[in-house]
Image (cartoon, rainbow, N blue to C red; front, side):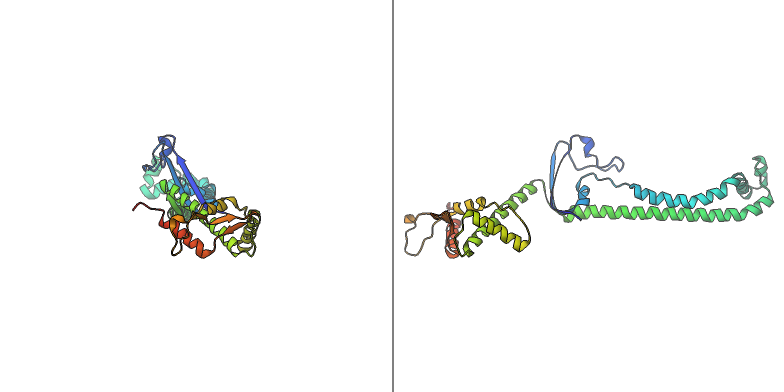
Length: 286
């Protein structure tokens, strides 16, 4: 089954008719016309996309209707074929048994005690078949209602457990994810430059990272090398050693280029000192 790792849903109702949760259930909708609603979900199967939309209506599918109607028709046909040819006689027997022979004569129905004795077995058999048919139809309908309840539970579970954020929270989540991806790219570039035995140009570094991703995660990507390189070059600060005057020390970048265009990064211990300096001076307002 195809699964979408992230699904963003944007909804705008044009008028009050679009906000009606259902034409028949009479429930009030929580949607307001002309407002925009945004939701973010995770791990949604392709076939369950429609569950995310508001005002989902549960109805019998053609398959459900056929499963309910076709067996009922198949069971009803023998009963109808058995009853219809003697319908008037059966009505007369029923009237005879219920009201007595006087009503049979008044209604001019064809029924006498002999017919009653002959048809009583037929009526009992037909009644049994009708009861069986009714029980079968009730069983099929109960299966449909059970399926409907399971469907509603599936919708509820999808909306509850797979929901990440709504409205303003969606933008905050997307910004957080974007910043996290930026950090991952920076760490990935710094790691490969730090562990490489030779100095690498941006093109060589790009090829190395793409090959590493394919080997490590079996994933082919087109890595954007220039973004993280620019971010690393823009991280600048000072490394102040004991006995040195901070004002006399110039800012140095975390990443620089040599005369051959190869990338060079600070060793790990110096990089930590640089980041520590940047963090300590980020809020110099106390």
